[in-house]
Length: 601
Image 1: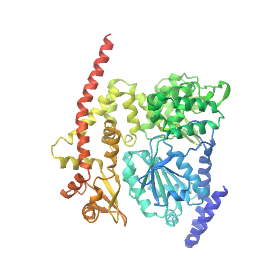
Image 2: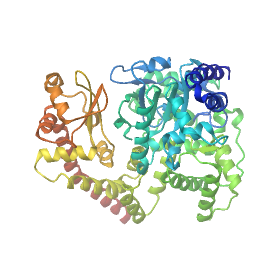
Image 3: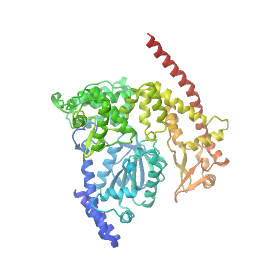
Image 4: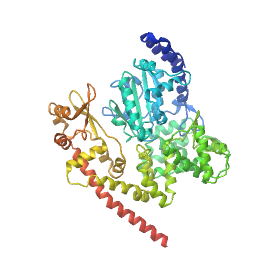
C-alpha cells in the first residue's frame, strides 16, 4: 500500500498542478478512486491462484516463472525493468498461445510498475466491453469511478493527456467478432488520442491484434528443455516435494518422450502433467488426453496432490463423476458460445439450474457449486467471479459435448459453426474438434469450407487470384520511414486461415501469415520503394506507412507483390487446398467403410 501511495502522490500532485483549474476533480481520482482501484488489483494479483494452486491463494512471486519474448530485434527478452520494455516505443503487443503465460506476465508487469513508480498501471479486460454499451474511455471512467459519483469523461480525458498511465489491455482474442470492428476502432482512437501513455495489449495468435497500427509485436517463446525443468522445480517448491520433481523430470527427459516436448513447452500443459503425474505418469500423446487426465484426477485424486494422507474433500451433491461430467460439458458449451469466460454467481446458478433440469439430474444447486469449486476445483472462484482454471478446459468440454452428439446433430452444428461469432480467434477450440472428432469434423466442417474457399479461386488468372486472396485476408504491410524498409506484416484472421494452417507445414504457415522478411527487399530501397509506397500507401503518421495491397490494386502493385514473393506463396496455398479436398474425401470414405465393416462383424 505504501508503494501505491507513493506512486499516486508523485503523479497526482504533478497533474493537479498542471490542471489547476480542475484541481478538486483531479484529486477525486488521485486521493480516492485510483488508490482504491490499485489496492484492489494489487491485492488480487499479489495473492493469486494458479492451475496447480486453485483452492487457496499463494504469493504471486512464489509461483511466477519468467517466460521469454521475441520480436524482430530480440529472440530471448525477459521482462524485468518495465521502463526498458517501453524504451523503443510506447505501444506493445504480447501474443502467445493458450496457456503460454501471458496472464502471469501481465500481473508481473502491473506489480512491477507500482514498485518501480514508472506509471500508474490500469488493467482493462476486453471481454467486459462485449456487453458495455459505451465506448472505450467511458468504460475506463466507469472502472475508475465506480458507483461513488457520476463519471465525467472530460475530466478523465484531461488527466490522460498528461501521459502518466500504463494501460494493460488484456484478451484481444476475447472480443466477440460482431463487436471487434467497433472495439478495435475505439482502442486505436484511444491510443492515438493519449499516445503519451504506455500501452500493452495481449492476445492469442490469429485474433487480428497485428492489424492495430503502432504496436510493436512481441511473441511468447515456448519453454526450453532447461526451463521445463526449472518450472517444474519452482512449482513444487511450495510443497517441499523435491522427490516428486525429480520423478517428473526423469520421465520428461526419457529419450522416448522427446517428441512430446512440444506439449510440455506450454506452462499450462506442463502444469497439467505435474498435477496428474501420480495418477498418469506417462506423457499423453494428445492435448485431449491431457484434459481428460486432469478432469479424472480432479474428480478422484486431486487432494492427494497438495495434501498428505490421501485426504478427499466431501462430495456434497452426491453426484457420480458421470453426471458431473455431463453438467460440465453442457455448462462449458453454453458459456463458451455465449462468449463468457468468467461468470458471476447469478449466471452460474441460473445456467446450472437449466442444465440440471433438462438432464433430469437430481441435486441441490448450492451443493453442486460447492463440489465444482471446492471438492473438485474444476471451477475457480476469485472474489465474486467464477471461471474455469483455464479457457482451454472450457473449450475441451465443449468439443467433447459436440463429439457425443448424433451424426445428424453434429452435421447441423458443424454447418452452422463457421458463422458463429465466437469462432474467429478461438481456433484452439476448432483444433480440439479436429483432434477429438476427426472424421465428422472433416466431413461436415473442413470439406464444405475448403470447397467454399476454392469457389473464389476457380480461375486461371494469377493476378485476380492474388487480389482476391489479399482481399479475403485484408492483408497489408507496414513500412518504416524514412528508408521505407518493411517492419512487419498484418492480416485479419478468418476461418480460411484456420483451414490453411490445418493443412500447411508450419514453416510455410509462418511465411504465409507474415510474409517477412520480404524477398529482394535490398533492391527496393529508395527511390523505387519510396515511389511505390507513396503511390499505394496510406499515411498513418510521420514514421509509419500502411500498405493495403488489395484496396489500392493496380498493375504496379501486382508487380510489387510478385517481386517480393507473395504471389508464389498464395498460388502454392491454393494448389495445396485443391489437392487436399480429394485426399480428404478419400480418407473419409475409407474411415466410413472400415466402420461399416466393423459394425457388420
